[in-house]
Amino acid sequence: MTDLVDWYEISAQTMALEAYAHPVYQTKILETQRIIFSVKTPLQLIRESCIMRNYSTYEGKRLAIQECCHFKQNIPIPIDHQHYICAIPTKSPSSWPCSWIFYAHIERLERHDSRHTNIHFRNGKNQIFPISPNQMEKQWIKAGHILAKLNLLDKMKLLPVELFFPPL
Image (tube, rainbow, N blue to C red; front, side):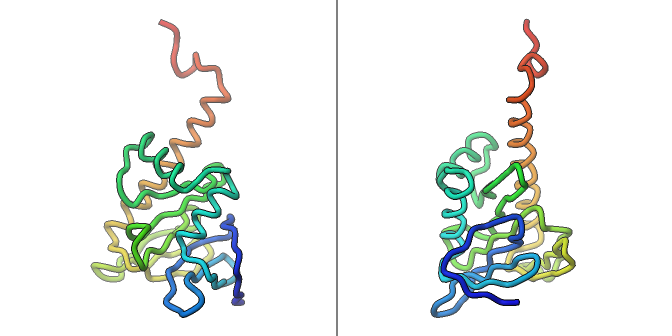
């Protein structure tokens, strides 16, 4: 099923936001059960979902990840880390055609050629994206590291600090 939308919120069903060359629709949204076309760019959808889901800006999330994880470029953006909704950019987010793949939906990566990766999703579908297999694997690992670190930090807030930092 294919839908056309003016407004879209990234959710647990979102598998990828693919830059789309069309006079009106700029993003092809791959969901687990359908394909949607949006008039907004992938980065606009990421920015809006950061604010809607976490009351935080894209820039704020990007800066926080740079500080806590020491990543500098093409930073995966945790839109909702507690639900493992983390967007992985395939290129510099400001460049076209940067697409975004969502961490929790990736089953495995397969080399298509030296500059393209065939991403197999958990729902049995697959799609070829313009990112080298080595770079995509690094991005996938980065996203996993970010999610693990943020979820661990959440857990540390719920437990007595003495469990992690015993008194001297």
